[in-house]
Image (cartoon, rainbow, N blue to C red; front, side):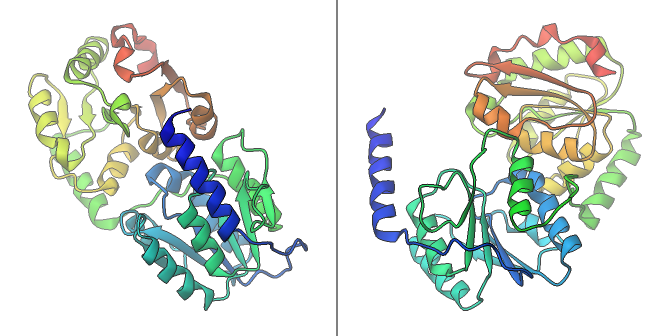
Length: 343
C-alpha cells in the first residue's frame, strides 16, 4: 500500500471517530415526504444510470419532494430532469461550502438521504451529518453508525444497486429504463447538421474516455478509422468535445464520408448525435450508457478492472461487443475488428 493510501485511510478513520454518529434503526416510516439524493461527485455516466430513480419515485409517490445535491459542474444534467424538485449546489473540494450547504439543508427537514457512493470522504461524511435527516441509506456503509440502512451487495451493476436502495423505501416494482435527457436547442441544431450532410445510417465514434488510459492516441485513431472505412461504406460521425474539435477536423479530412459536428458545446449535442446513429464505438462509459439507454448497438472498450466492469458495464438490450484491455486502450489491435460487428 502506498504512503498516499495509508494517509488517506488514517484520515478516514479519524473522520469516522470525530464525525460519525449513531442513528435510529427503526423501519422507514411511510409516507416519505422528502428524499435527498447525494450526487455532488456524480459524472455524466453516473447520472444516466441513476436517471430512472427520480422517475420511479414520482411514479410511486407523486407528492414526495426530491432534492439533489450536485456540483456546479454537473448541475446542467439535473436541471433538465422534470422529476427533480430542487437542486443544491456545492463546490466539491470546499469543506466550508459543504458546511454551508449542510446547515442550510438541516432546515429543510429531509426524511431520507440516499448516498450511492462506495468510498466516503470526510467532507462528505460531515455534510451528511449536518443534514440531520431521519434515515440514511448507503452502499457498503455498515461500518458507519450514521447509516440506518445499507446495500451490502455492491458486486452488481449500479442500476441494480439503485433498485435495491428504492426497495428499502418500499418503492417497487420499478422500471430500470434510463431517462436520456433531451435539450430542444441542441436537438434542432444536430437535426439541421444531419440534414445538411444527408446523414442517416451512420456510425458514431468517441475516441476519448475519462483518463489517459482510455484515450486513443492519433495512430490508434487512424488505425481504427482505416479498419472501419475498409469494412463499411456507412458514414462516420466523430463525437467531439470542444477542446478536441480541431484534432478531429484534421483527422476527418483524410477520409471520405467522415464528419465532425464542429459546433459541439455540451453533452446534449453528443446525445442527439448518438440518438440518430445506428452504432456507437466508444471507450467512454458516459456515451456507452447513453447509447444503452437509447438501445443502440455498441462496440465498447473496458479495462481489466473487474469491479469497475461489474458496476458500469453497458447493460444494453441491443447487440453489444465488449473488448478488454489491461492497462491502456492503445494496447488493442483495431485491425482485428470483425466487420460483422458493424451490422
